[in-house]
Length: 93
Image 1 (tube, one colour):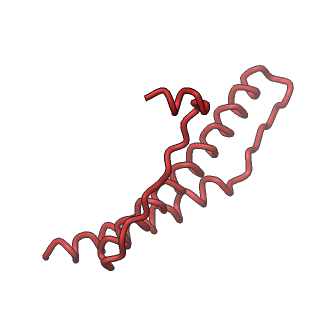
Image 2: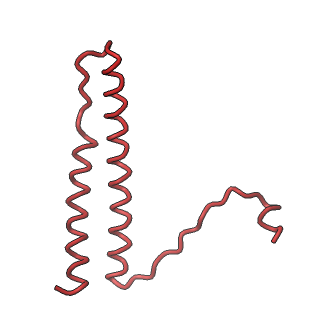
């Protein structure tokens, strides 16, 4: 199996992983006893898990797109890095 075939296999696996992460993000959060302090912790952990699943899915999709572009021979887009410096800081060099 050559490198291109392996990368295509990894891309297919990445799409499968994204599907699973979407399932996690779509699951309902069920809290049986809302008055319990433990239930609040469970709710917080479930929300954090969903957030992590969503961000991981986007990260995987972005990386898949980059790899697919490289395989297709498309030029990579230069990403502009936002800096928090003002005009004076940028011009002081």
